[in-house]
Structure formats: C-alpha cells, structure tokens
Amino acid sequence: MPVVIPPADPAGLPAPAWLLQILLVFTFILHIVAMNLLAGGTTIMAIAHWKGKSNPFFAALGARLCKALPVTMSLTITLGIAPLLFVQVLYGQAFYTASILMAWPWLLVVALVLLAYYGLYLVQFRPDWLGRWVTPIAWVSAIFILVVGLLYTHNATLNLAPEKWAQMYAQSAAGLHLNWSEPTLIPRYLHFMVAAFAVTGLGIMLLSLLYRSSDSSWADEAKRFGARLFIGATIVQLAVGLWFLFSLPNSFMQSFIGGNTVHTIILWAGVLLAVLAMLVVNRSALGAVALTILAIALMSVTRHSLRGMYLSPHLDVNAIPVNPQWVVFVIFVVLLVAGLGVVGWMVWQFVRGGQAEAQSTS
Ligand code: HEM
Image (tube, rainbow, N blue to C red; front, top):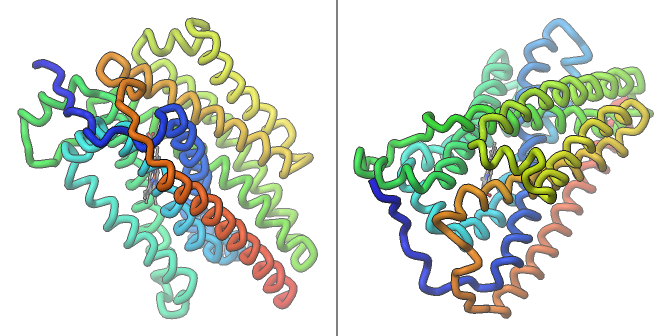
C-alpha cells in the first residue's frame, strides 16, 4: 500500500519552523516534569495509603502527597496545552491522522483525565466521606493516569509511522486502532513511567524539606525514602533506556551510538547527568534536581531528533511555507511568560501554605 500523507495546512506556519520547534521542545520539558510528578506521585500516594494502614510513615506520606496532587494534575494539563499547539501546527499532518485512526481511545483520554482529577480531589478533601474507599479511589486515579500515559505513547508512536496510516484506515475507519504492533511502544512507555518514579523520588525529598522543623523524624525518613526511590528507578531506567535504544530501527539506533556525533553526544550527556544525579542525591537534593532537569531537557532534544529521523522521508517542517503572524506570536509569548509566572506563584503559595500547616500541626 502506498504511503499517503495529508496535505499541509494551506495557512502555513505562523512563525519560522526552527522557532516553533524550540518552543515545542521547551514546553514539552515543562509538561513532562509535571507529568512525572503526577504519574509517579499518584501511584506512590496509592501505595502509601495502602501501606499506611500498618505503617505511620506511609500514612503521613499518603496524607501529605495527596495535598500536592490536584495542583500537579492542573500543572500537567495546563503545561500540556502549549506543546499540543506546537505539535498541531508543525506536525498536524501526522498528529491529526494518528488521532483520527485512534479516535475513540484518544477521546477516552479526556474522560480518564477528568475522572482521575475528581478522584484526587475526593481523596484530598473528602477522606472521611470516602471511608475505606480512599485507597481504592487513589488506585483508580493512579491507574487512569498510567493508562493516559500509555495512550499518549500510542499516539506519539503512530504519529511517527506514516507507512501504517493508509493500511490501517483501509482496514477499518471506525477510529479504534492502537499501535500495539510497534516494537518501541512498551520500552518507550516504560522509559517515561520509570522516569516518573525517579522524579517523584526527588519530589518527595523536596516535600520532606517542608517538615524539617515540624516533624524532623518523618522528614529524615521521607528524605531517605525519596533518595532510594530516585536511585532505584534510575538504575532500572539504565536498563529500560538501553531496551528502548535497541528497539529502534537499526539506522536510527546507529546514529545515537556514534553514527551522528551531535545526536550521540546529546543522548549520552543526558545519561551521564542522570548517573551524576544518583551520585549526588544523598548529599544535595537540589543538586540532583538540577542535574535531573538538565538530563530531561537533553532527553527531550533526543526525542525530537528521533521524530525527525522517522518523519524525514515523508514530512519536512522546513518546507512548509511560513506566513508569519508576529502579533499573535508576541501575544502568545507574553501570555506564556505571564502563565509561567502564575504557575511559579501558585507553587510558591503551595509551599508556604504547606510550611504554615506543618508548623501549626507540630
Ligand atoms: C494527565 C495525564 C497525562 C499524562 C500521564 C501524560 C503523559 C504523556 C506522555 C507519557 C507523553 C510522551 C509520549 C511519548 O512520546 O511516547 C506525553 C506527551 C505529550 N502530552 Fe501528555 N500526558 C497527560 C496529559 C496531557 C494533557 C491533558 C495534554 C494536553 C492538554 C497533554 C499534551 C501532551 C503533548 C502535546 C505531548 C507531546 C506531543 C509530542 O511532542 O509528540 N498531555 N504526555
């Protein structure tokens, strides 16, 4: 079957392709850091509620984590919208095709996100009302969030497979396709989810700082637990990352192991930063956070280069005509900066509120 690619939007790109790609990668990094805290945090919160029945450390961890999660959910969604805009504008031909092929599972994302969000609110604000249902509801939210991540990986990998589109559509136009036949699907998904637990480990270390003076023994244990989670998940990640690398088509894999110097340096510098973060995490949580954010940034650049490798035989964003709309673009940048400022302020208020509450309950 021939490869069929829908035509590009005749309106063209509203800004040069290079600028839109930088913004795509930048906003994706923000989304993925928030998503990591959400996916890992919700799962750890569910585990903590369950283990907390017999263990006071986990009982307090569950109660303290669940206060942070609705905010993290809203950050994940808000910070997902910006890369969504750039993906649509740059890679609309691929994004819409993949989204139509998997239309029903893709629409399910909205329902799963909403229900998981409600679940997190109920666990935070109505634990007495939920009674013994707190732990099951926490699990339902965690599972829904993990399924949403999997659906995103189905969509992202289907985006990269133009040679499958026409055949899939000819097979069925019901919008029920997924991308299970893709060999990178599971390692790619696990690569994101294992990272989610590592980043959540760092998040728990930061959370422990709020309780340093009011509940120091819990804070010490939370710090140790967070560091162990980070190190354990990052060790697992070294194996999962290699699995992902070796599941790639051979020519792409080769360009990350010496075939292309820039791609190779960026990927392995990211790995090195993650290893350094493991080495410093017990001495400096903030140092490990900084190294991990840099590693995530380099991995996001690698992910973007990989997209270019898959799509270059069929789609070239640099060939799409540019029809600049600078006024709209400036409005976007101003709103983005203002929005990030508001998010920063929200996180700051959350930290201050948490500190005040920690003091008052001590
Ligand atoms: C709440 C649960 C969510 C989870 C667990 C989640 C998880 C993920 C994961 C794992 C990826 C990477 C997929 C891959 O490359 O294989 C991803 C990418 C992405 N997500 Fe989310 N996401 C969530 C919500 C959202 C929402 C609500 C939006 C939009 C409003 C969004 C927008 C995006 C975009 C635009 C990308 C990248 C697209 C690309 O560069 O190809 N996400 N997400």
